[in-house]
Image (cartoon, rainbow, N blue to C red):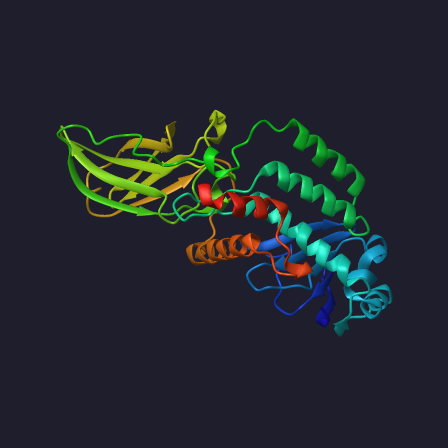
Length: 340
């Protein structure tokens, strides 16, 4: 787990430690594969897709961070930061097992937000109760690093106890049995298409994460052009109105927005559009006020789905590798995969 890290100080007094090119919380926009862990006196980050085992750190309170800096990056790095020295150093963690637990804790937090559950792509959802319980356990193991670990563990356990029956197993997951909205009788279908949605723009557990979960049809009937938008739902159940997804339809003639409604296993809406919709149509699905767009993310989403499928495959037959031990929620998801 040793490696070369850059130790430098930003203009605003923050200290930055980590492998060359590693993501940090100072980046303008975080990619969806970045693991983030709040630590005493700063933040730790890892690139999941890059297989980064040694974290990058941004420190805003060096004195507080010295409690764990030696354990994560080694004595040489800790002494350099204490002395105000910068440069390229070799990180040799004083407690490698703690670094492994910290990665797993960061990954568990990531999975709670970004796990790409998809009935279409065969990626089983993670049980939130198991995930929260493991986050609490890993927080206790990382108490040297995690700021306010005791308070967080208590809050996580309380949250797990208060959770309603959240769909997490295959039998509770949306089955996408059929379209929630049918094409009106006599309407002419001018065009159709399908695609994905920007994961930054919706909260987790709302929509199927597949790149084929959004479908649309341009309809013409009674002199009116509309776009029928359907999105495969994730979990069943009541969704607060402020979390209902919206469809933004762009055409060569203008834009139109409509709130989607949940019927069965589909979110759907028929959106009136300007003339010319039959020529070029794009559909964006989002929840108002959630996140922001990240250009170029379809390829990253594909890689994240591939990684999730790989981890579920390994979870079904875990290898003896502590750094890559599946989460309990992943093992349960892999076991339920036969029913998914």
